[in-house]
Length: 610
Ligand code: HGA
Image 1 (cartoon, rainbow, N blue to C red):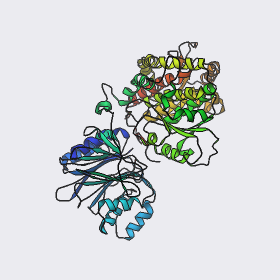
Image 2: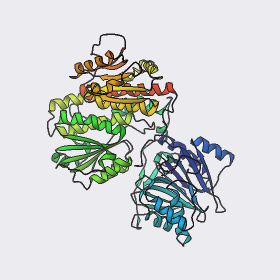
Image 3: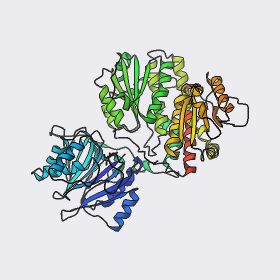
Image 4: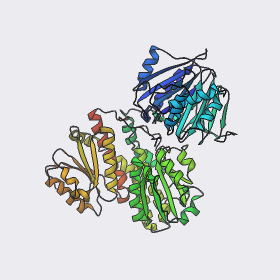
């Protein structure tokens, strides 16, 4: 979602800020802006709707230069994407603010400020922050005190970067509910919503905690907690290499990330398996006594991660013999719960900053769960820091908005958890050995399925002129169908629905005609014959069928039916393997349609607003 970069340095900061914004582009945004204080104590600002390149063009025409600055990529929540709504927002030319998140009480604050003579130039919730800081400074507070007083008056979520014209060489940063890091340099310091933005200038970071306000100057960084007390926060070295966010030879990040899945899975499984068992220590030293008490599992996640949870439910119940519920985080957090004893609360999130998932975790802490466990791809994230137990996926940075390698590595992580818990319940040593053998073979199996890409690219042509499509699966392949439909929607903008194949005749069959391609996933499992009957129902209505089928499955060749053989794998890992061709299908349809594959319209990468 939106991104923040800020810098206080002896050198000119404009270039650092612009490079930082470019590195945040993958998160999705609709406009961008920058404000820099000049040596005469005036703040100058440039803003542009659209890509960072438009801002760059505006800066080429009218450059900014100076030693203190903030910049932002905006993903609108309040007010349309326009120049006037783009950040930084300013108050009377004196205070400039960039903000990620939502100020929930902005209307009341705005009325109050208008009553005090402040005027507003935007429809955003953010502008109240600039004016409120100005108001506190006008009554004598310095920048730090003014920001502290302002955040105490805000409801909602924010990461903020604030500067004032008459306090050059100083940035004040604050966070609650949206991530913010301080980048440490020598004689220069930085702020950003994501470490990627700052990797060209530093690898040393301090992660602000909830409620922190940081006073950032060239030589010093002082962090104050929510009570105003000065605190030390640990410095961490980022392990992400600056080039991990390059596209390599691939046309899009998404394609690169699809192809990285075999390696990402190998990394995620590395050191976690013996020849025939999942190693017991991989969830950390605290896990054993917690796992011994567990009787059931509640999974909470959003989007693609939610689909991973839906697949895991089949595994938890069929393999581990543990009851498992799965719910989207935005629903979970707003209803009452009855939590049975011994329930593990599992969150799944690529970024670990997904606002609804994080809020659900915080909510869950008061609900009597036995413990929380996060499956996540970003070690420094809030979700990881706030969970009792953690299993890191090791997918590496995922830049494409449509999640691919994060999803399959989450599934691998979930299988590890199923084994770790299952052996205390219904999982036999023999079944665990079978699962582990399948996991050992998984990276190679994914390589084999990636080799189908040229055939899938050909099949994609059939979708280009279609407006709707249907995805079908049964059992654990039903969430795979959901994920395939989501991928197609996200990046090709073709309306796609997924159904459990047995539901077809209860409604969606009415939609089937020659203009509605139907995609099915058909592993060689006990539901195969049932699925085949469902597919006959589609054919009988003139629908065109594309079936990704286990290579041992026989289909009689006929008109209207295209079968692509997927290399056969163990039933338990089939959901991971069958996901890959669906990702490739969505990717190639989107490329043919000419959409912005890595940054599809209206969407953002880590969704840090509710
Ligand atoms: N509410 C602010 C910032 C939006 C945001 O954080 N998006 O991710 C606005 O609408 O400008």
